[in-house]
Amino acid sequence: MDMADRNIITQCCIAGGGPAGMMLGFLLARAGVDVVVLEKHADFLRDFRGDTVHPSTLEIMHELGLLQEFLRRPHRKVREVRGRVGDVEMTLGDFSRVPTHAKFLTFMPQWDFLDFIVQEAQRYPGFHLLRHTTVTDLIREGDRVTGVMAETPEGRLRITGDLVVAADGRHSTVRERAGLAVEDLGAPIDVLWMRLPRLAGDPEAVVGNFRAGRVFVMLDRGDYWQCALVIAKGGMAAMQARGLDALKETIVSITPFLKDRIGAIQGWDDIKLLTVTVDRLRQWWRPGLLCIGDAAHAMSPLGGVGINLAIQDAVAAANILAGPLLKGGPVADQYLRAVQKRRMFPTAAIQKFQTLLQDRVISRLMESRATPKPALPLRLLNRFPPLRAIPARILGVGLRPEHVRTPAISSGSHTARG
Image 1 (cartoon, rainbow, N blue to C red):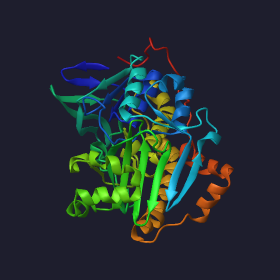
Image 2 (cartoon, rainbow, N blue to C red):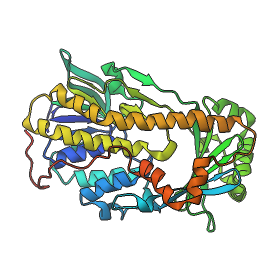
Image 3 (cartoon, rainbow, N blue to C red):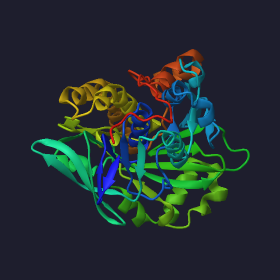
Image 4 (cartoon, one colour):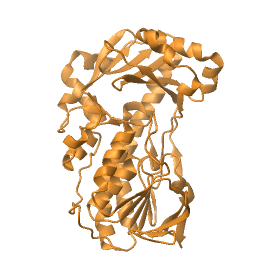
């Protein structure tokens, strides 16, 4: 990275320091590429971010030789996914049978995950993280994107390079400035996130509660539950009109054992609205620009797949782009097209599954006032334990899983141009 008079020249500029951007920055720097990652916040301490780390991501950590070190960070292991449909408690997935080294998923706060990636990336001199840096516009030469303009506490900053990667989330400034067309696949639900204390004697596993007209998910975070109440799209105002006490009564009616701690919700400031969006770009790239992660495809929170798909995008992008970037000069369109081709099928397949689940199961359940009964596939999962490996593999490993193919330079060497 060369920097003078508020201008930076690099090989790859990544907008967004979330899981996709940080993992891509790490893998490229590990391969010897000069990378600048731009993060608009001063730190990663933001609550209710995706923190479900699936076996597919843990396998990437294993391939990087980092799994044991990674698992020293605070986390909770989950080997079975359990739920309650009406009055029937069921086991819906068993990760002990997945074909990975770590046969479980973990819940790890996203700030711990990102701090770990940054720690490892900073071992390589080609990795540069600029915090408090917000991308505001693109720099172009003809039809090619050649960099970005950004705002920092010290003023405007110009970053140019051979490739710009948009990893700045579902409300991506970069993709908006690039004029990339977004296909909205629809989402009939939103989610209210909240924390409630977890006490000794509470259930150990993930608990999804499906009751008449209600869906309530509880994720074990050790000393607290991260809870999600599914509501109809745009239903927040109606929920507030009914009052906070009505919300508390709804939660207790679904999970009575929370009655002794529901008072932890003291106001609407303790409730965070996640406006659910499921969309994807028709084309993920422009000359000189590639979108990955939520900037390319926003996922529903169903299944907690978002962070893991973003990381799969980053691994695929690094595998395809490291070589061209190391050669120097603008990255040819064929490589950007190849990243989209590689990742489009698993993205579209998971989104199709999510929209079917939203439209045909969750929405119908919320409209019903009858006590739900487990459908035949769920009854089969409950009766025949080996079948539980199927949803665990689909959820935990995914379709067309990526593997690290990029080389690793010595952490003391650096091959990128100055």
